[in-house]
Length: 323
Image 1 (cartoon, rainbow, N blue to C red):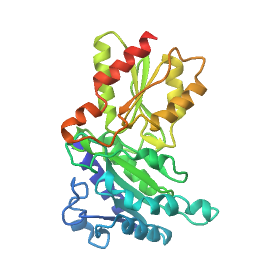
Image 2: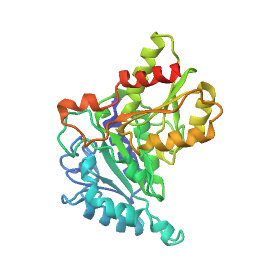
Image 3: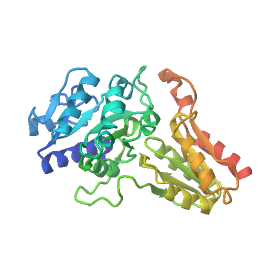
């Protein structure tokens, strides 16, 4: 059994072993091993020229890594917390995302940016953001989010191996979830493929990251009440595997989308629009969304009311089944 954080550590270790051009960069990732200990022992084993403790300057971290990527390295940057990425936003969306298009494909940016995201750990302000829609809206970036240790292990290696920049969101409240992981197994899915986690026939729940576990819990409760819910883990937020979602919705006729970020203009809005177009005649009810409220992330004592829960997901399921 290995935790999600441990699986990421193992995946980074494998990437460092396999390619001497892989370099890790971030605040306190070396001697400390990162706030969540994802990079624990890596500097000791690979040296401080490949696992680099940087100044507290996110724009500088990404700018430096971008230059290294243009010179043939494969940097992996850690943004310590989700709310700390905004000082680097200009570098990411104005430079990193555009370089391949700007140069007609002659320059590439094999840069992976790891971001612990989401709430559920009782953190203070700026430590529980869900900024994935900002980056998914930016052409030129891949945006992914593993939900379990096995995916964390394979997806981080797939991201690093790509020649495209990848925003790699890690659900921090799942860092300590454990599962069996075969460290020698080859990936069973491409980086941009969704996975059906729980098969079902009555309604489809689409989600990603930390909310996958919540949706699976909701499906178990629904099963006890006689309803069969299909749960899909997106894994990739941009691009989105609409084919897997469409196949499920054509079968169930109903769709509920759940994510931690605000419902307003969130990832669920794009999925709802696309599936309403592609499955208009198969939908038995309107597509419903469950997510955070349209407010700044609340204080820790209130976050349980803000985050999607099994009850909130099941309330939406009841509405769609009753339509």
